[in-house]
Image 1: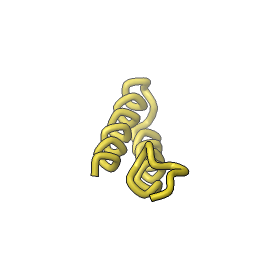
Image 2 (image 1 turned 45 degrees about the horizontal axis):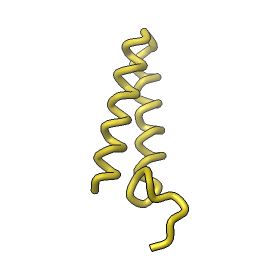
Image 3 (image 1 turned 90 degrees about the vertical axis):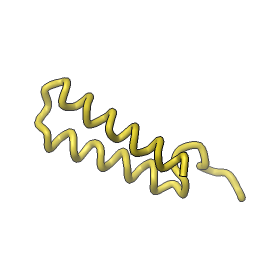
Amino acid sequence: MIGILIAVLVAALVYWLCTALGLPVIVGIVAAILVLIGGVGTDLGWGRRGTVR
């Protein structure tokens, strides 16, 4: 659950950073979605890669 929350927060940060840099909103949305998929797609988010449960 914590990993998913961190992934969402990082995705929001990436979106904010893209818009702050003056990039189009669609670029920020796509970047945030890619970060979200990358974070949530690893079972519980970051920090669990390669570990055996």
